[in-house]
Image (cartoon, rainbow, N blue to C red):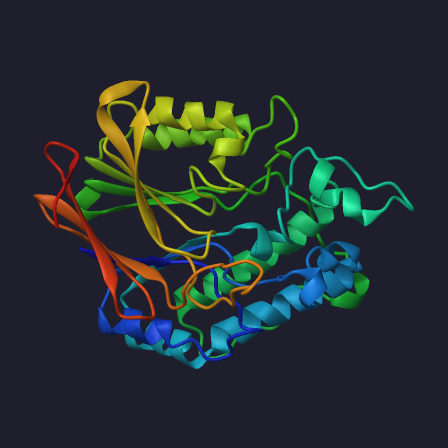
Length: 349
């Protein structure tokens, strides 16, 4: 069983994305897209970036730009070739902030920006992070359309699901996010794809949650299944900036639910690859492993901020004895990590 995973592809900066060709050459059985499949905004404003710009668009303009970005990404030559040549490959996806709405976007509780209030405060108090129910409904509809086109291997991208000019007419809001799960290897492996944006609170609230209680209850049910191994896919990493670590009660709930189970988290967001071992205070015998593959096609911000390498992706190979995780990058160098399935301990590659 071979599972490829990656995140963060910005067609506006990289209209050619050869990283997908490298994934194609490895012939994966499953492709997991771990967020930021498109970028509604990106870059430091001082350098011409447009962070938070989509929050100021009309609903119709927001929808048009999101639809167009998905259309462009779907048609990118290397990505489309991967889909058409690997027709039996299963594809699943989660989203993160830039393909949900805009930078640091939260669909749950978040302070509002008052009229005339300076936008310089937004990084201090979380303002402009709030995504309205209408924007959430648009984002969900367009995400599901993109995922459907990818799974169906459509020859051409489908037409918009609504009239941009008349929105929100004909649009229904919903509290249902994009989370889903499926089983592999005769039910011995379960893949759980989380939605960490639709109901995410601004982290500044003392009781902030990264998922609401219904989503967390669903996750517990998924982990309580008969599978031997669970792969949890999350757009946000467990630790780092803008991560589960900003939501201590949610992170503790995740670790509590994972106690007694063999769990590997696959995540993206941070524009670099990494492999992490997290102690679980609720289970001293089974640690929580995390493999991060982020930066398939994104631009760094040198010399001001370094945001990682290019063509970053991971390949997870699973057999009866172990998990082999290979983290690839543009330099062709790669990091390899092994997990023993019986002992649930990392081994030397």
